[in-house]
Length: 480
Image (cartoon, rainbow, N blue to C red; front, side, top):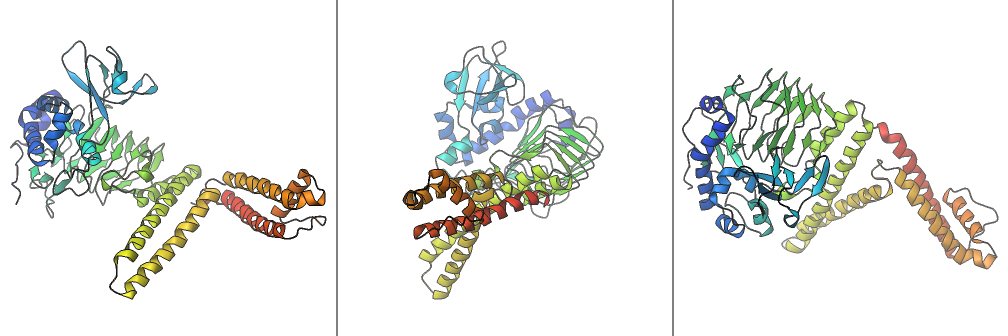
């Protein structure tokens, strides 16, 4: 049985009463060393990773352990006038222009944006691959309790009391307790390093926490949070448990949820301006929510990092929220993503059924069952793929016009080579025959024979389908 590693014994109120600088300094001395030692002792090949990228323990403590773990590429720099290091993503920006920066392109004196939003001048630079990304690419199972390569945050089942609630990292490291409080004047999250903390049971009713600066919460637990009549900006949650998050009659701006867990969350009668949802089991119920310029993480339907599969229910709820506010065009884009996820899920079911056909050899009933599933799912996948190809599930009806034009031109060329040249017709006549065949109008002078009859018949069927898709696509723009 794993040995439980306790957190520092200090009351949450004392931690919140410290200034942000005092709190961060206290954690570097009293909390982060045990987390670093835990990783060195319990994460597979963690010491190998430290050696490969020449990262020492002081850098982990100074720059924040979480910044060395997350699933993104980073480069960190030193400021020239002070011997303090800041950490910045490779994807940076000069002013308003996004620039792709590589380790080879850094120049002394260049200025970049750090992950905290501050400017960072290059004195010296060091690039590294975060541990979790490195472990994933090297097929290393980081911990016995992590089958999918994640550093999971869990809570003892059945413990709902704020006083006795304990949160664990990978089952045996207890996180620093900072929750169980109602909001008050000293409860400011701004500029605090809130990684690997237990923030369960905090009530933010009718308050504005900190300032408009970004508040990042990483590898933590923020269960049973309540926002009522609040206006909050720039909360960024990453790899955090958000079970039972309650947001009511509030205004949120610039919130992000990346790879978060949590069920039974609800956002009601609120406005979410420029918020971003990512993969994970965090799928809040949206009731009368105005999603102004809010969207999904880029490439959401393809994001399978750490075993996270896209949640079609989240896409559906966001689609319905946009539709309820009359934004049918945006709702249609979410409908397109919804259908793509469903098509990918059907394809995975087909692969599982196909594998089962070759692995199960005990009874014919099992073989018939999986063969039946394979045929059924194959038919659904083919139908979905055809709809995507023809008109993007009704959201790209203009694609029908392009496909129809290609069919008419291609058929016209075939008709000319197989019929027109022998009848003394010009290429323009053949294209005319192709058009009237496609729209099923016909021409009494056009009397096809042989293979040309098959071409004309297929073209007429495709024409009927094309017009049907086209009319249905434009008419269905208000179907949500």
